[in-house]
Amino acid sequence: MWIVYALLGALMAGIAVVLSKAGLKDTDSTLAFSIQSVLILIISWTAAFWQKNIGSIVEIDRKTWIFLILAGAATTLSSLFTFRALKLGEASLVSSLERISLVFAIALAVFFLKEELNWKVIVGAILMIGGAILIGVSRQGQ
Image (cartoon, rainbow, N blue to C red; front, side):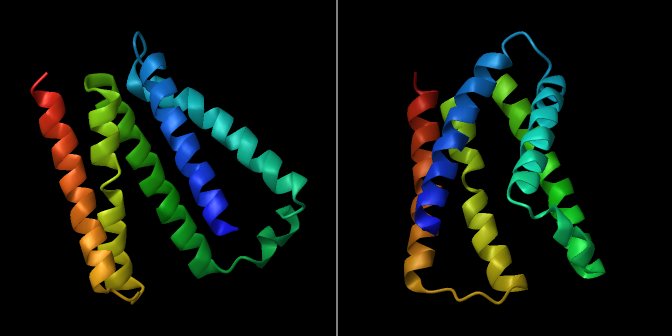
């Protein structure tokens, strides 16, 4: 079932990039992200209440809070940088480079989480980098 959610997440991310780029035409990138953040806040808390998960917030330990807060800060900075890039560049180029985050996630997961690294993951990461470069080079020539 996780594959379905991952694919839906990818689809929504693609839609978000296109809609964000369209919305950034005459709007400051930070302001645009701030507007979207309000919706993110409302929708995510509504989902937590709807799923009746809100009661378990008191069970979250200090270490988990720290990780979640740091991840939230990283997510916010990632989005701010991505919105700025979308304001300045083409959606296809920005999105292809931004998706190299997978390569960074692999490296960080191996180093910090001790996740297994095998030849398939390495080849996949190389292909991701190659794909981003190929998209960038093909778009630059236009």
